[in-house]
Length: 231
Image (cartoon, rainbow, N blue to C red; front, side, top):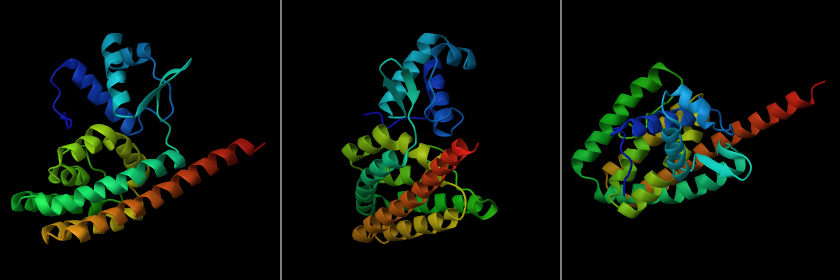
């Protein structure tokens, strides 16, 4: 089980991380076709390295292959997001419950310190961007569950697809402050070793995030269709 590491070991790893970051953050648009030739020029590596990176990105569920089309970045859609977030709500709710039981006092103190650091970002800006890995609130709680099967399903499975929706659609605007406050309440429940409350608050937090992102996606689709209809 990899539980993904952010430390590149080879040049192929470095290319994979860069390409994944560009897709997650929207520098490479969702739904866009991935050309091995163009990407090998952009990242200054061979087509074989790009091909390997694309294959790895498929297993992260952020790239898909279609017959007669080739590799494409997945499209962000209301339907896809709802299905994904239903799974996320159940699994991360369980992770929060287990974290309240299994995290050490030192790990919980680190989680509180992480939120203190995040508060500076929220206070000074209307965005709540979290890098992947240890500086991501959700990632810390997933690892804190100490359940390897659950960690693998969330981190090796859907983590980066979830991040695509979070980063591109859910980390700015009025939702920022409420999301941060929800994080605080979840950490408080974990600190109090209240397993049931931690799960309930996490599930509710993800449901609220889902509703926020769904509204943004619907507005985006509506705006695009409005533009097409204009003479």
